[in-house]
Image 1: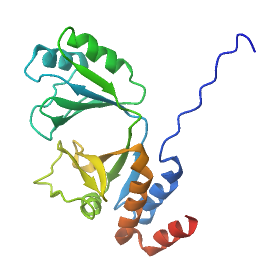
Image 2: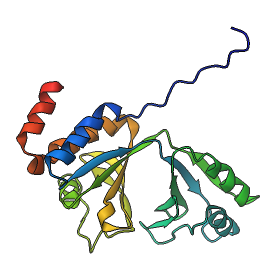
Image 3: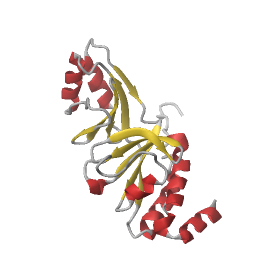
Image 4: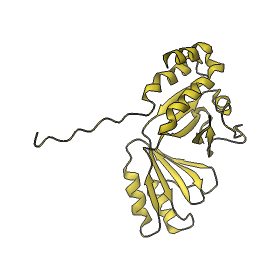
Length: 212
């Protein structure tokens, strides 16, 4: 019909069908392990010269300082910046913060700055609870002891043979972000459910396999 606005399909999380399985781990473990998805976070890959004028300008525009120490995280308000390389960061914000990209571009001015919206490439799993580190250690080769991987650290690594970005949140009780490519998210969710059997008991694992 003329004049009718096109309809937009609602966003669907790559882990929409896994939501109940993740919640079941939290219930069955008595909160020892808590699993949940944080869908649709805004994620921007930013590349620039950390010693150039653009670094300070972009930091000022975002209200945070881009971290220069390897594998560290800086958080300010709703935004989090992850160090990925000497001239590369991942800036993470709440869903729908598309203004972040334009603010970074404007702040960069004529300086060489690359900004790529990678929000659709990944989703984020929240792994928390008293046994979160033990759960992750089942499939991650990093030393996850709090002295080695403390709050405010991040790393590009593998978890259950899946490439992820692992982030130790700024408060120990906040747990970890596990940023994983959307195409591998379902596999990783199943791996986490399986690996949590030590705290959930075998009944939950048997139920999942029967359903699948």
